[in-house]
Image (cartoon, rainbow, N blue to C red):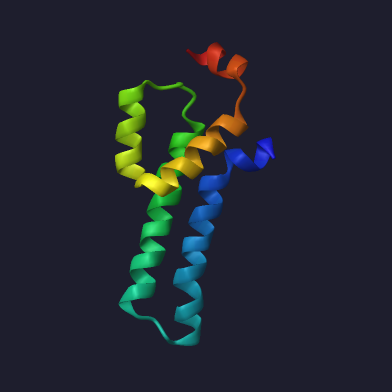
Length: 94
C-alpha cells in the first residue's frame, strides 16, 4: 500500500487519459469528456507533486495546496502522502 500511495497521482492521470482516449476511439468526443479528462490529468500531476514533496508543510502551505488541488482531491492526496511516508522519513528531509 505504501508503494501505491506514492503513485496515486499517476493513477489519477492515467484515468484522465483513459477518459480522453476512449471517447476519441469511439468517435463520441464532446466538451464534457475533454474537460473532465483535462481536470483529472492536471489534478494527477499536481497531486503527484504534492505527495512526493518531502517537506512536511505548514498549515498555510496545506491550505494553499488545498485551493490548488480542489478540496476533495486534496484530502485524497493528503492521506496518500501520510500513508506513503513515515515520520522518520519526513524528519530526514526537514
